[in-house]
Length: 85
Image (cartoon, rainbow, N blue to C red; front, side, top):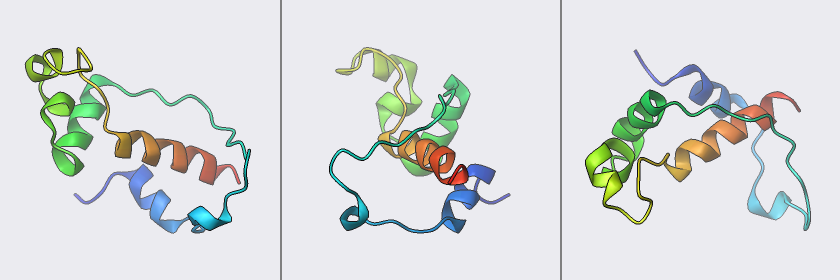
């Protein structure tokens, strides 16, 4: 099956590195809907921490509930901003 569409698109984009950023630079991105299913599916594949994949474990965590992986949010935002450049 391979990686999801948005992940494949992210790999095709022009690379920017930390040194390419300027102080105060803004990224204009559209909101990204993170469904429960998408959070769990991504986490199972790339970041299987209990608070990303298990509702009970997540409720006992510092987050108090299921939370998306920071890698997931970074990928989603990067794809959105990158596709509109």
